[in-house]
Amino acid sequence: MTRPAPELERLLARAESVLARLEALLPPTPAEPDWESAIAFRWRRRQGQGALAPVRATHRIRLDQLLDIDEQKRRIDDNTRQFVAGRSANNVLLTGARGTGKSSLIKALLNEYSADGLRLIEVDKNDLMDLPDIVELLAPRAERFVLFCDDLSFEEAEPGYKALKSVLDGSVAALPDNVLIYATSNRRHLMPEFFSENLEARHVGGEVHPGDATEQKVSLSERFGLWLSFYPFDQDAYLDIVARWLEEFGAGAEDIACARQPALQWALMRGSRNGRVAWQFARDRAGRLPR
Image (tube, rainbow, N blue to C red; front, top):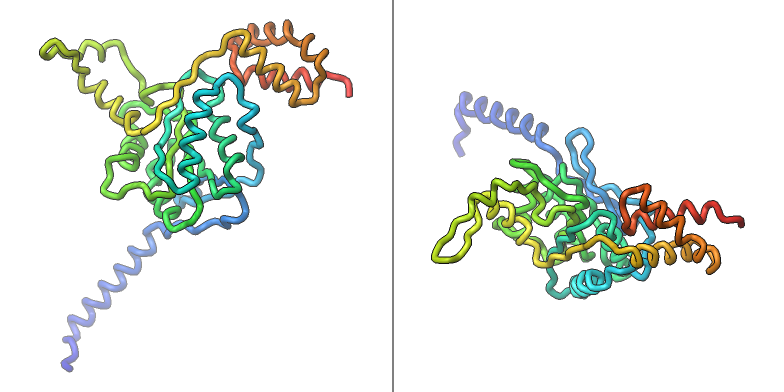
């Protein structure tokens, strides 16, 4: 067999050297975590490299501790049970008033179904560009993964918006069967909406057609197969939640009855009456009770 000419050998050697240096500049494949060490993980970037970090102590909230969101709880619980059982299920968008249990509901589902193989991966909005890498890491696993994007909202032209949109329903590569996305947001369409956008609406044959800006914003949220809306609590619901958390913290019936007026004053000072405020009041009140 004829040997290559010296010039060709030198050229090939230089090409191999350049390729080796380029490979060194590329980010390495994300390392797998110790899957047995936790039921929840966070995607974290350090020095330009993303990796899954185990969450050693997860929030131990239970589904039965979440009151006055029964319909939302039933629908997402049904969806999650289908997913854990290996049946078809939908990505979920939870939107609405702050402090009404959106994030807590997802954490409670993890505690309910972790023994059945459910795992939670928390992904910050700034890391959504890494979604394809995260999905590729999870696809071969036997567990069922929920990618949890909390308090999600986008401004115009943010790169994470397109990344999430592509992973949900716009890429050649579909989400694997063992991965779903659950996202919470105070905005139903995940982006700011302006009154001027209503002026873009067109009337065609008696029908109203939204403008391009509105269509673009709706196009992301509608990629979630299940929408759950959360609403502010009325006074009775707020007091029910206060009583439940005081009971959880060990308060007696008399202490709970005496806490009604202070609980309303606490909500008035906070300017909000929701589940988070009720929990914070109960923690404060229970900490003052004699032991």
